[in-house]
Structure formats: C-alpha cells, structure tokens
Image 1 (cartoon, one colour):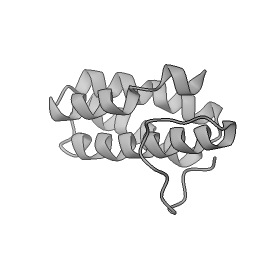
Image 2: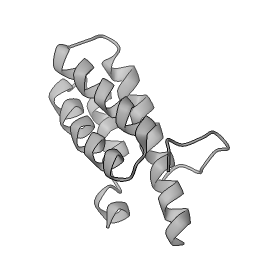
Image 3: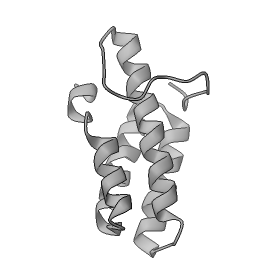
Image 4: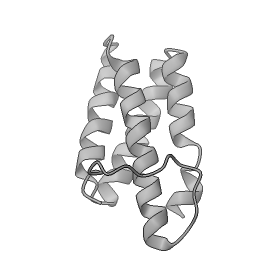
Length: 101
C-alpha cells in the first residue's frame, strides 16, 4: 500500500522545489514525516521534519533540502520494494545507509 500510494511523491516534491512552491513542499514533507515515522525510518523522518520547518519559515535552503528528501524517499521506497519483492520505478538503491529501515 505504501509503494502504491507514494509512487509519485518524490517527483511531486522535486516539481514543488523547482517551482519554489513552499506550501506544496511543506505539505509533502509533513506527509512524509508521518510515513517515515510509521516505518521507523528515523533519518528520513528527521529530514522531512527539517524540510517542513524550512518551507514554513521560507528558508532559502528549502529547495535543496526538498531535493535531498526526494532522493531519500526514492531510496526508502526502493528498499521497501526489495523487502516485499516488488519492482519499483524508484531510483536504484545505493550502498549508502537508508534511514533506519
């Protein structure tokens, strides 16, 4: 269910960052904070929290951090897909640690 419902989340986050749409970034980051928390992906949850706070306060680094969050979401979804044996169009998993999945 997570894989299906978040298939486009990282692309939407990147688009919002490109458009400097702070409201959309904050909305996505807030949703991802909850998702990552539920999955015990503490690093992703912490990054999502930081992105949400930055977006709501209009910080200049918001776009960069949103891009980083999108990358982490791709990695998280790829890791989840690997665990459940599904193929996903998320970015390939690197050897870098992914949150606490």
